[in-house]
Length: 457
Image 1 (tube, rainbow, N blue to C red):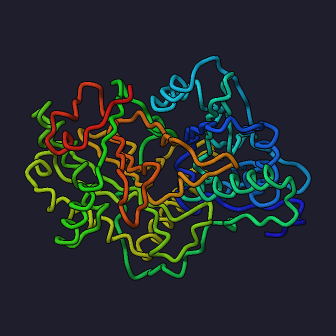
Image 2 (image 1 turned 60 degrees about the vertical axis):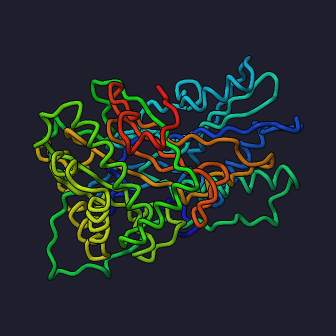
Image 3 (image 1 turned 90 degrees about the vertical axis):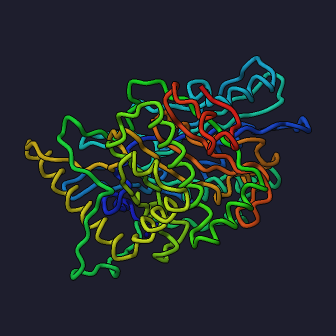
C-alpha cells in the first residue's frame, strides 16, 4: 500500500467475501452513570471516525468497483467516501431504550443503506454506517453500527471498533492525536495462501452450491414464517461441565456446544413434523481459519469458510450428543490450508465465469454458500465469544450490553459473550441466540430447557 498513490485497489473476490453483499449490524448500549459532560458528543464521534478511516482504514473510505476480473475496493488520495453518521434524540427513559436494544429494534436504532449489492454500475455503498441515539434525559446513548460484510468479517470489525473507541477516548481526554498510535495495526489485501495449494489433491466443496440465476441472491432470505430469536444462557457451572465432557471425548468446548445446538434443533423439528425424517439436516460452522493458516487478525478479508456436515434428520435424532460432536470435529478438522486454498481457487474460478457471463449477456450458473439454501433442518453457527466486544470504551466506560447482528433466518445460532465473560476462564455466563420459526418452542427440548433465557420477537 502506497499512502501517496492517487488510486489504490485491493481485491475482495479472491476469497469468500463477495458472497456476503449485505450490511451486518450491531447495537451497543452505553449508560451515562456519572452524567458526564460531552457524553458521546456527535462531533467527537464523527471527527475520530473520519481520522481513523482516512489515516488508518482508507478502504473503509473507498468504493466498491466491479471489473472484468473481479471486485475491488478502490480508494483515492483526494476524495473519501466517509462513513455517514446520523443522530436522533428520543423522549423516553433509559429502561425503555434498553428494552428496544434487547429486542433488537433495528428499524429504530440501526442505519439502513439504500443499496448493498455490488454491480458494474457505480454505487455509493457505504462501508460502515453509524446511527447515534440520545435521550433527552442524557441517561444513555446507543450506537447502531452497520458494516458491509464484503469488506470486513466479525473479527476485523471488532478490531476496527477497538481502534475507533481508543482514538475517540484519546481525543476526548487529550484533544490531540499527534502522539497517539492506535492499539491494533490494520492491514489490507486478502492474505496470500497460494503456498498451501497442492495440485495433486482434489477436493469436493459442499460448502458451495451452484444455482440458476433466478434462485441466486446475495442476501439471506427471510422465508415465509415469522422467526423468533431465543436467548439461551450457559451458566459458569454448565460451561465447566461441558469443557470437562469435551476433554473426555477429544473435542473442543465450542464443538460440543455446537453439537448440543444441532441435536436440539433437529429433535424439536422432527417431533413437530415426523415426515421430515428422511430429509436433509444441514449443519455448518462459520469458521475463521486465521490460526491454522498463520493469518494476522488485523486483515479485513480473512480466510472464512463454512464447514458443512450433512445427515438425514432421523440420523441426527438417533445420535448421542458426543457422536454429533465428533462429526462436527471432523468437519472442522478437514479445513486444512490445502483445503482452504482449493476452496477459494474453486470459488474465484466460478466467480470470474459469472462476471464473463454477465458481461456477455449469457445465462449461467451462480455460486452461493450452501447454508443459504432451504433444508428441512438447518443449524448455522457463528461463535463470537472471543471477540473484544465489551472492551470498546469511547471515553465513557464500556457498554452495558451489545446485541449481535439480528438474523431472522431459520436455523441461525450465535454464540455470544456476556459483559464479564472471558473465553479463557469461563468466568461469566455465555449467551446463545437461536433463530427458529415462531411455532418452535425451545422449552420443549430437554437440551434447551436447561439454558432457556428469554425470547425476542
